[in-house]
Length: 238
Image (cartoon, rainbow, N blue to C red):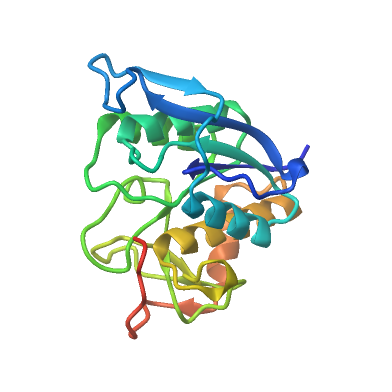
């Protein structure tokens, strides 16, 4: 069975059919786009256009892990940003669909119980969560939660390289990689997280029995750079 990577984002359509395992769209339980009073979330077949951000994220994951099979968990639309409850429902769905890695190229300003508990459930089942963390400024969630691999952009890295950063910094990113979007266009932490999720997935494809400890040891041993970059990092999308 192919290794499955969940992508919690705005959706994607420009991937080979064989690279997609399943897709779902998440929306609040009412029909006006607002969070419903009972906290309900609808999981339905995608019927809104995919967003460019999601297309870029999927492309970067597959570029680093070409044999991975993707799960398209859509939580954002043009007029509806992702909410903690939608992201939490999407994480739970990815885990139920057999994801080994879940990419979260997003960051929410506030710690919310529903999101924290969804991450705890995923991590408790051995699922690797990769989330974007800004290079500077206040921490964001879910990158700040225990067990989540927090990733920032590091302009020192080539697309197939990564760095070991300082998780004690304000933003809390432990890892960094190339922040460029597909085609070398300017990107940021969300693009770096997607690329790192692909790097992690590719390692698990080659070492399917690797546990979290083995993965972290590998990442630390083969990090090209250590410590934060002193130059200014472009963070145009995070």
